[in-house]
Image (tube, rainbow, N blue to C red):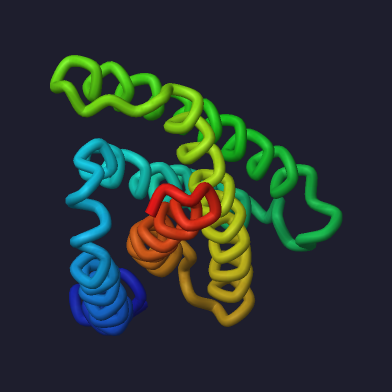
Length: 185
């Protein structure tokens, strides 16, 4: 049984960590390219870290739930599984509530440090970027979890690291997409 040995864990984990490192560098480069636009709106600098973590964290939560359901034999059919459906609904609710909470917190922070922005603008930005991020990350979570399970790889080893990193990439892209849609930059 070589599955839970140091050699087995490192052998399965190293390629995933290599991929996530490359994706993380790419996410940072997107921020670097757009740095002039976000420095002109300092409140966005406060918003970015919290908002990009919502997708990765809720996606990882969804991935852990799906992985547990696979280990118990409950999640074999994607389109008919109440476990998958209920897990996605719960993750969407948590993600959207977190977006609202982040917008309130960032707005209060902006008021305290004289970085004023309309609350409704900030809420719309958070909800637009958050919805895009949640839909993309949850789709990737379900696809990676089912593919890992189908090909005999433990979803615990693949889903959470990949989704946490993809959440950063999609979150950064989603913020800039939402800012362009709302004509903020």
